[in-house]
Amino acid sequence: MSVSVIRYHPNTREFVEEAPVANPGQEATVKVLRLRLEQQQILADFGVLALKGTPFSELLDQATRCVADGLQAEFVKVMKFLPQENRFLVCAGVGWAPGVIGNATVGADTASPAGYALKQARPSSRTTWILKSDSEPLNC
Image (cartoon, rainbow, N blue to C red):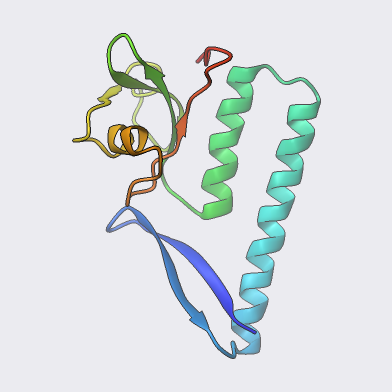
């Protein structure tokens, strides 16, 4: 059995898949299992919150907290694409300085990881997730 682990490395600010362990020791297996169970519980709790009809802005805030907890990440953000300005607005997040959420923007050109990912229609080498909806505007 092989186990893959994705870890966040704060020094490089990247998520990296660690090499699979061919025959993990019992300690490694238990650690990975505990993390997976915790992630499943976080996801289940988030699903219940969504089904309760939580307002979208609160759901985005909770989503960023869930991602931070589940991936053990210090920083998480949700960005809204602003096509008229060709920029992204940070509209939810965890770990950012006061005033960033709802105010900070990032260019949508290929110089930024978010812009590159949008133009390529696939994730960039950094962990940037873009929330884009053609049917409904994203209300931050």
